[in-house]
Length: 259
Length: 294
Image 1 (cartoon, rainbow over the protein chains, first blue to last red):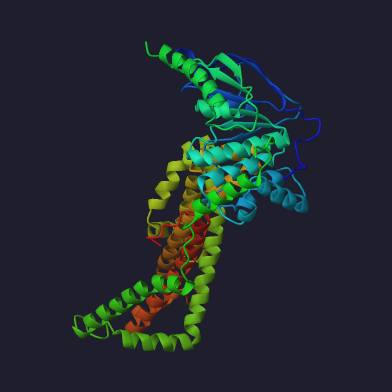
Image 2: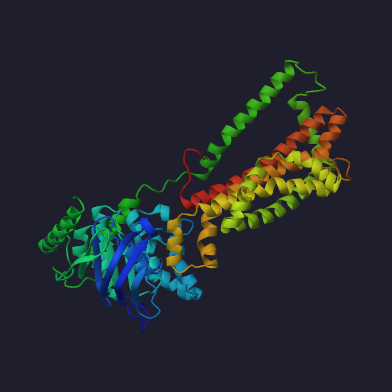
């Protein structure tokens, strides 16, 4: 299955964070969520952010998505790039059909009706839901809803995809299949993906590069490339070895908070 | 055969559609339309039969003389007689016109007021609780003032109907907007809906169930206020349903009185059923229809 529609020409999917700091609250109650995070994500790169609770993973994505402002430092995106964001919940609009949900960003981009219809069909084929366009979100399974959310985000035609534990609530079988799906779509569309997870194996399965964040405050403490050829299997020994390495570092970091 | 590309293979496609088929199997329940209608109808018919039987029993017990409380048969005959004459229909037309005008105006006021309060912190602090207080005020308590202001006129009735209905509608809008799930707002912003578009694509549809509930409650209040008004403000030219109640009492025409009451009850029930159907349709679309309680 090939796809012609990709990111708009000229828009580059690079993401650069320079000394990004985020403080919540003021005075004595201030909490330092992120402390001087610098990260360069190449166009087309798949980066997984891993960390324990309170490492500010989600804060970081919100900042990149423009839903929140950093307290310090800079975030640079390609010109005119507005990243698409996916959450753990599909967050579909329950009053619309699957097609209607995918149509919302297209309508907001003022695409003509015929073009929209074509795009919807193409996007639903991409996520293997071509036959489910007329269904309503409550009629679908969790994995299918998450694929609709992916199609809706892809409808933004943005080169940068931010994912906040998007498969966290799914069973292992569904998650494995969605890993394959996401990997395929990412490579077909040459997307830049910033993927937050606390599942180290998932990170090793998907990422070109794994970035480990410390907790309270969030700082980058470790970064490693995953040089395993694709397609990968989550249960392969190479992935397991990388996951073990990252898990050890993560445990050391968690243990630091135990004293 | 090992594939060296990550483009979807037929095997992966089969897996994914297989999983979908397994996961949504058994989610579609099909009951025939006739079954559904019958299931909703027979309890109502049974309740009606019991009520009529109880009425007849009281009449037979002769607790009240028949000229005060006539039996169902007498009232039924009167109802048929009324329905074949012009008076009932003219009365109904007058009452429904007042109801429609008052209600439509209330909807306008309620929607605007609700939206304003939901959006503005200052307005909410100022009049948010007052709207609820207005809602608890029995509408009949407004009539003395309304009569002082507008005399015994249509305007007095209109005034009280709007005061009865608008606060409920406004409250529906406020709670609807307040309880839009934050996640949907985030999702909406993320797909590019900002400002007015966020209201159009996310807030308004998400608040719709609560708004319909407010509209339904507003209708109940306006219908009650209207009946109270028509009982009190009689004597203005046309004979409304409320006026017919008063006349029939003055003429001690119990069958006429009871048949008019039945008409009022039925009109109220029909409109309520229309709102109920709208509410059900919305909940079915949202997938939050309570199967047991429908």
